[in-house]
Amino acid sequence: MRLSFLTFTSSMNNSYTPLPETWFHFFYIYMIVCLILAIILGSFYLLIIFLEKTCHKLPMLLVVNSCLSQLLLSCDILAATVFGLQNDLAQIYYQDSTCIFRAYLAYAATGIFNYSFLLQGIYRYVIAVYPTRLFWQTVKIQVLLICITWIFGFIHPFAFMFTGDITYNYDNQICQIPLRLSFSLIFVTCNAYLIPVWAIQLIYFKLVRYVKEMGGRVTTTGNSLSRIERELKMVRRIVIIVTILVILGLPYTVFLFMSFFTDPPKYHFHIAGLFINSAVLFVMIALFLFTDPLKSSVYKRINLRPETVLPVVVRHR
Image (cartoon, rainbow, N blue to C red; front, top):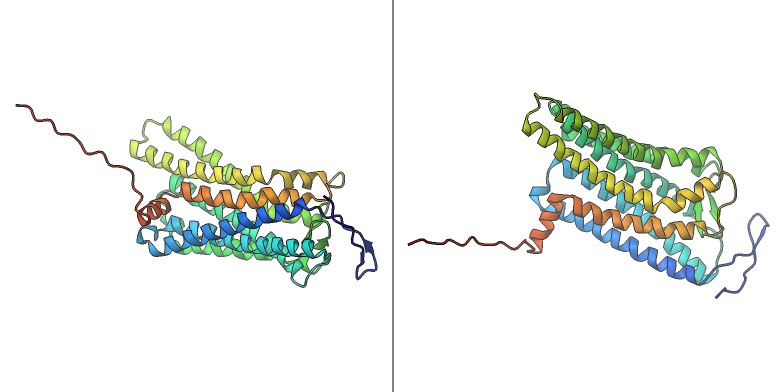
């Protein structure tokens, strides 16, 4: 059922007649539920890691970084989604004072979130290929790399807040860089998404080739090969997580490339938002399933242990 038309005059004296659909409200509700669940999971993971001493290890520091960046991204998208729902319900079609900042923060947090998994991949690659270079396996170096990714994440889209590249999209009730062939869109997409995703894939393929090379060497010990294969398994898990982001981000990617040649669908972000917000939730679930120390700690907290089968001793007379 289509709602009644609403015409208003913007500050630029341009007439605009939005055409909201009632089913958009269900989209908003679904996205809000996904984001709230993702925030709850991320906060729960951080609490468990903080309380459990078995989680106080260097690899878990990188998991904490992923959780923190996810919380930043989820809270920002949640604020934008609630704003859009309120405006649609009230039939209000203009941006608020923080709309452009929320868009900037979304681009920044997306980059930091993706780079957090790249740092996990780099760490696993260093352990597997250069196990004797302990300098790169120290807490100080990892904290430095984390700080660099956060600084870069906040800096690379910063200028677009003041250049007018981020604008308010009436149809989708969101501020964003318009989907069209432009330097700003390509720049943000490459820095926040393409570079970390491609780099993670490259690390995985290089590690696979390294395992094959080590397996063919006569001098390779069983312990060394086992250690490398274990790290390859961890990198494979990171690739799976990133693949979730890639697959569920595919609608937005399709709309983005479509915009280079023609206009994307009018309500493109409502469609893409369903998949993007689902991706954030699914990634947090996968992060739990693939992080053994975190999973073991949670199971211990809720007293969930696998059943133990006691051996039966048969006495012979």
